Image 1 (tube, rainbow, N blue to C red):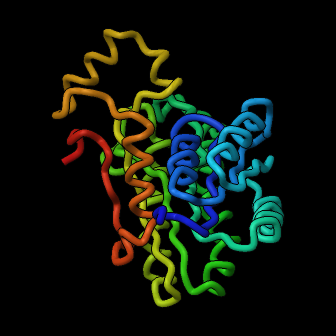
Image 2 (cartoon, one colour; image 1 turned 60 degrees about the vertical axis):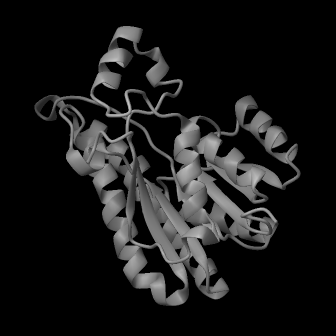
Length: 248
């Protein structure tokens, strides 16, 4: 029997990158997949088809995760369509880097709203459903930057640190209802975005990592699968680093 058979996973920002890898990992283990993105374009439609080819139900939903009411509406639609929501992965995220003294208010607000407020919105909407089910796993996609900070990323680091605090608080509030909450802190992961860096820059990054390589989206997805499944039934309120040892 597959690890997530009969479960429904809701993954935000899953039309590409790490979120998409998590969606495919979950689907390969039997989970039905509801995913959101700001728009469901051709890429999102293709993701639906590719996931369905794995023998599961899959549907993408256009949603601005930073809007509270819109989030509650889309979660209601998903619950009605799928019948349950057993796993929530708060993965939606953006960057708008810049040195603190040059950072604009709009840069700060955009990153906090998309990365952190969206996780509050979805957790707030999904929690009552999981409470009625008396079970659920919430996974916040943080970052090593949320633990250690990073120059020119004060907004991003603050949002990712907030996701850790949110997961730990939810774990304490909802643990008695059978709901677990954890965070994943990826390090240097090779995605379409980081692939735009030069080979020289990527090589310098690798030199700072004990395992001497960047991670892959599948490296992150494997940890997400562990946290989503009953393999981690006694794991809650934790931060798991997926960074090749760069943050020890």
